[in-house]
Amino acid sequence: MSNNRTPRRGVLLIVASPSGAGKTSLCRRLMADHKGLELSVSMTTRDIRPGEVDGRDYNFVSAEEFQRLIDADAFLEWADVHGNRYGSPSAPVERALAEGRDVLFDIDWQGARDVAAKCPGDAVRVFILPPSLEELRRRLVTRSQDAEDVIERRVANAKGEIEHCDEFDYVLVNEDFDRSYAELAHIYHAERSCRRRNLWVDGYKAALLKEVV
Ligand SMILES: Nc1nc2c(ncn2[C@@H]2O[C@H](COP(=O)(O)OP(=O)(O)O)[C@@H](O)[C@H]2O)c(=O)[nH]1
Ligand SMILES: Nc1ncnc2c1ncn2[C@@H]1O[C@H](COP(=O)(O)OP(=O)(O)O)[C@@H](O)[C@H]1O
Image (cartoon, rainbow, N blue to C red; front, side):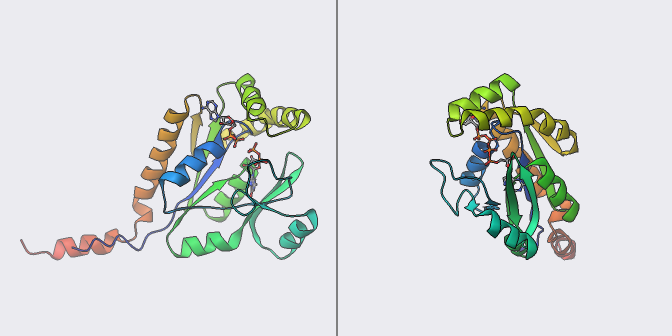
């Protein structure tokens, strides 16, 4: 029997949360542990933070360039979040899907809704909740990458974002990081094993049934 487990449909794994709940940290660890998983690097008009790398964390563009990309239909989805624009370029996602590769999205609930509507069989949505809003603020303050007014706007927006968690397939409470990470990794592994994604099974089954024993 062949070990070739292709063709398969890739997973579009979407992780969303209010700012500060921990989705970027969880996504970074998932990427580090799974070399076959590709991050959808978003375009954004927000300012670059200390420690961020242009082209790795985001592609940082001007408002004019972002509008040009909207007009050129270059986004799978885009949204206004916390007063800036963010969008997922469609070309890398189309390539990954055509090749059966998995893509990870760190996007907000609006983007999650749009990707799930456009790619219904492929998208898996995970929402990360904080243990409390007080802890959310504490994490944003401790991260110390945003000005006080930016942090307050993000905390104020959190309730509106949490309202949308029932549109998601999975919901995690990120209290203990290692535990939340293990849950996220389990979700990813289970979705990878899902029957409908593993198109090779039909051929494999036929070969097994032809075997003479
Ligand atoms: N819809 C959409 N949301 C995005 C995209 N990229 C990032 N976001 C979301 O925009 C919000 C703000 O992101 P960011 O400025 O990095 O702040 P952080 O969430 O505090 O790390 C988060 O909810 C991100 O998940 C995108 O391409 N599309
Ligand atoms: N389970 C956790 N317990 C305590 N701190 C955490 C936990 N998860 C993430 N953090 C910290 O909280 C801050 C916000 O996390 P981050 O991943 O940037 O969130 P988000 O991308 O959702 O805005 C970071 O300083 C991160 O190290």
